Structure formats: C-alpha cells, structure tokens
Length: 362
Image 1 (cartoon, rainbow, N blue to C red):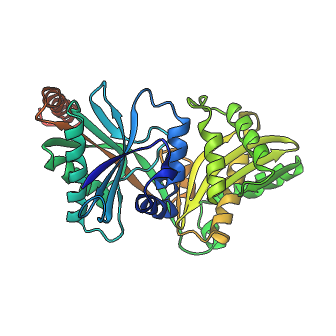
Image 2 (image 1 turned 45 degrees about the vertical axis):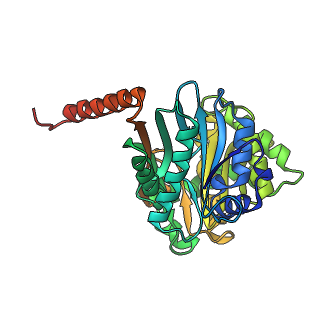
C-alpha cells in the first residue's frame, strides 16, 4: 500500500518510516532524515512540493515499510524529479534491508502507480544521480517501465573514489612522486610562514568560527557564490550534530586560506566541498589540508572508502584510484500527449547525437 507524507518535518514521520530513514542515514548521510530536513529547509524549491512516498507490505496499519521515494512535484510543469539539486551527489530510493530485486521493483511500481493516479498531470519523471547498475537504479527503471513509461538513461557525472586497502604510509608511498614532493616541500614552506591546520568535528564553541572561516575562504576562491547562502552553514551544523562532520581549515596566522568539508558515515569519507584562497595557492594549502584529512580518516575513522563524489577534475586522480559513473533516468508517460511528445524528442535527440559521433556510419 502506498501513502504520501509531507516533507516539512522529517522528525515527525511515523516511527517505522523514520527507522528506515535512520538506518539509511547511518550508512549515507545524504540518505538520512538530517540531510532531507536541512535540504528542504534551506533551499528555494521554486514552488515545487517535496514529498515522501512510502510503500508498505500488507497495508498501512500492519505492513512493513519496504521502500521510500523522496521526490519533488513540479505540478505546473507536469514533472516529478528526485528530491535534490546540484547539492545532491547521491540519490536512490530507500529500500528495506534484504529486499530482493523483484520485490524492490514491485514496491517502487506501487509507489509510482499511486503517484501518477494522484497527479494525473504528470508527464515526465526524472531521477538523478543514481549509482549505475545498483539495485535501486535497476528497480526504479523497471518500475517506471511497468507504469507505461519510455525510460532513458543518461550520464550525470564521473565519480572518483578510493577503496582503502592498507595503512596511511603505504597509501602515501604509492602516490605519484610529485604529490609526495609537493607535500613535503610545501609543508615546510607553509609552517615557516606561520601556517597551521585545524580539524573540527563536533558542534562545539569553535564551530561558529569554523563556519565563518569556511565562508571567508569560499568567497576568496575561484568558485561562484552559493545560490542558496544558508545551505552550507546549515549543512556543517547538521553534520556536526550527527557526528559525521570533518571540517578542515588551513590558516596563515589568523587568516583562513583553505577549507574542506568532509562527511564520514558508514565507513565512507565523502569529500563534499573544498576551496582555497587564490592569493595563497603557491603554498598549496588545499593539498596539505587534503593530506591531513586523508590521514585522519585512514587512521582515526578507519574508513573503507574515500569518495570525491562528483566531477572529473584532474587533481582527483592524484588521490583516488578508480572512477565510476553516476547516471540518471528520465521517463515519459506514453499515455499522455506531452509525455509522448517528450519521448519522441528524446529519441530523436539521441539518434541525432549518435549520427554526429566520429566514425558513425553515413
């Protein structure tokens, strides 16, 4: 049985729904109630309605919660999307532990059937970024197809990762010589200039100063201003309250010159945000900060995976060992005129791009 729950307060959900959210959040902060509560409360959703769709086995009163689908309803545009935006580096339907692939697809199909019945104006659905080939991605694709949708996959972004195998000295010794040389040489230069590194983990009396330092560095970096200014300060606080924050700061005297926001949960260290002051890049404070945080998650957090999340930036190859793909699914309801038109345009665009590739038959 499917039900729709409002997302204004994830802490006020039914106990069994919250239990599944808490279990998901323990292994992935971006899947838990703290993340969703903060996201909905700090991002301008442009009139879209956040909603949590639930599937229970056997009925609302007695059934076990099998699947949760966080989504956004764009009613005027006739669209449904994943509950997320450019701040979201991982997305997936939340599935109960031990759910088999067929049961997962059936549960998500039930959720989608109820959603499309409740929202007859929806003609397009889009979910990203998903882990390619995962149970969640495969089950969601099958569920969309069962609802009479034409489903297309697309590339979202590259994802550089490091499965941790061995201790910190072994890992560092296997890095490129230029990286080790940079760390040794710049470490001495940075210290000689009065530089120091700081790591903040908990919600204590240093956190406000840490957030201010992060914002100062970000404003002096090469990055565009945040479109939602409350998001990052609130995320740092939420991560600190949840015990997953690793906020690294590099200082020259009393001036912050680099900052990195990492989050550690479920044996995984996510490198979420990083920035450095361009005026001090000759001291490589960002590289020194990455090394300090990497050593910490190796030796203190004992992680099994370090994840650079999104993007194919060249510097990530210096630290990581493998790259994967994050994908998305876009689906069009063939029973709706706008859905049929959208599918035709999607297919035509794919044919055109294929024909334009080098080596394509002419």
